[in-house]
Length: 580
Image (tube, helix red, strand yellow):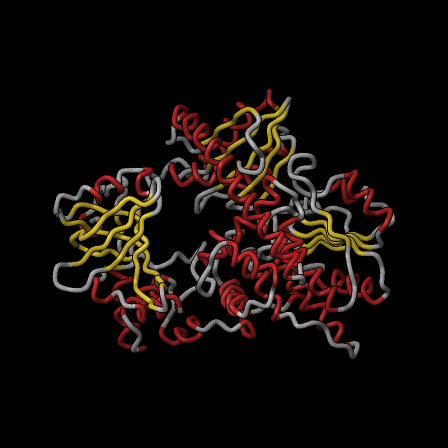
């Protein structure tokens, strides 16, 4: 039975509550731990037994951090990196142009700076060079450097790495590997095919962090002391959330500790970016993914490719402020470009059909910097894997996003092996590709078949999953703080979402072009304020603004609204349904 009998909400979704078993586990946890029931519901959903509740609520990096040497090639990678530092060799860092690549590069630059060493930063242009190492760039870097470290890229770069003759290459990556590896001195990647997969959830910045842990260990063994790595966890947290790595295992501890470091406001680049984004409270995982991450990404998407990485590594507050202002402006420009491409891609995908195993769209000169974001929007609208491709001349460059349980990266890689793609790779939830124009339809048909075999076409509209019900009087800042303590929340660990049953809309007003502000109560207790972003992009805005006195079930995520020194509960509204 649908939760609160909501079979079809105002957004067309079925509401699904916790299972009977989860309800019983939450009740048992509440009795055994004395923790509030909403927190126990989160623990039950994560499968946490009572004996491990406190450890889960306070994840310790010391106990969760894996031994870096459990990853293949880690020891020789750190040894060669340390040798280059000790001998003052010329080091180049070749990084991807997204947040994970930029944070990975900044980690290395930070560490080297603390050791009074420098490195050349090279980030390819998204349009002119595309993703990952290329032959001309690697040849040029090899002429002037003794060591090239590829971060967040390189695992499938066979020809470019082979072209770096006379120079050692280390790859620190997390993208899906092939059966063979490039001719690098070391390829450290938890998603190599000969790895166990136990650390497959790490982003590239976490892999870089582990290499620095191993490098510091080798320094200690030689009687020397390495830089403070804990102070660099703000970069790992940002990359983990922005790259949509699942917040499980050590990732939870990395993000939790990284947020604490970020709250100290020690990194000029992140301070400047937070200020330009008008963040007035301590950062949360939401801010990393939806406020800071997109701005860091903006340089790689439609501006100067290395701007985000240079901002993250910057130590001069004035320079950081100038770069943050530029990235903020680029992010605004990016949104405008994205809106145009999204409208065209959605119209094309709807005409093709949103119920196929693969939803895709391709258009002339669609900007390569926004196709991944638009693919995410198509995925969200259809609950299907989505590909969006920008065509230019005889080729198209695209990006894809997947849904839970469907490995898009492996399917893309198979397509490339079959010759239907010029290039392709990625991981389970995201992938990139280059396709010849004359093979576009054939490639997408084949990809659709491969994804159908994984069950991509079986799901209906995405259900709205709820963790339980709350009355307005129970939604206090104190309970929200306790819920936040069960985080961080993000991919693989969704934030708790609650339903407020049969409430009265006391106030509703349109804000801007598409948003809705409202307040509600159960008729006896206090009012709760709510915000619904994009409410007028669908039916929610009009239905709630013109409520006519009807009662509604409201569903969303609770958050703290801080204003004028006061802290109030606020609901970030996701959905609503008329109460029967």
